[in-house]
Image (cartoon, helix red, strand yellow):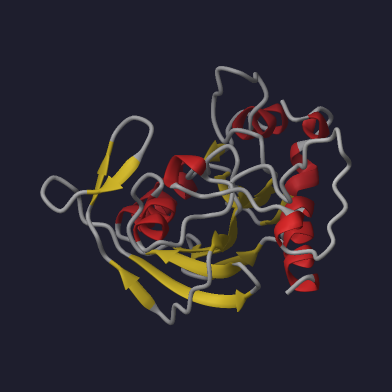
Length: 240
């Protein structure tokens, strides 16, 4: 468990809730579901409040952002059907290595998924579709927004990597760490200290989710960036 998550409570994470759903802003470094390393995960925190709460989808442990919980079985089923029909809109923000000008770019390469990873495979892969747009370009990095139409494992990470825009600090998909010394002139590195990256996880955040409630009203939220993602962007802008 990351040191900042020891005393975390589910209620601290809530963005909004109604009779059927709770939408939370998941911090990085906490698993959505059971984790062999840590007993504490997002679902277990929710069930401390109410045993009936169910998680509707998951984020990777290092990914931050919006996660939807259902308060009752009807709500859970309703969300699951929308997910299956690709009616849930999810928008992610990611910081990538390199300079990229994506404008509603359609990444549609099929993905083959193993237990731990996905890769583009035109023969054996399953259909996958991601819309990618550039938000900001910095000195050596780019902030992009990604809308995964399909929901393959690591879809955004695999598609961005395939288009030579791997996410910062995502070594499994070719993403290099981002260091201040690469941006700041006359960076003063202490002789015996090893420089730490500007963010120490995959720089990916689930920014927005939209879906329909049981009464057909649209539920839509945005999740604030966590501190580490905000600091990364602040530094990239400062030394741009």
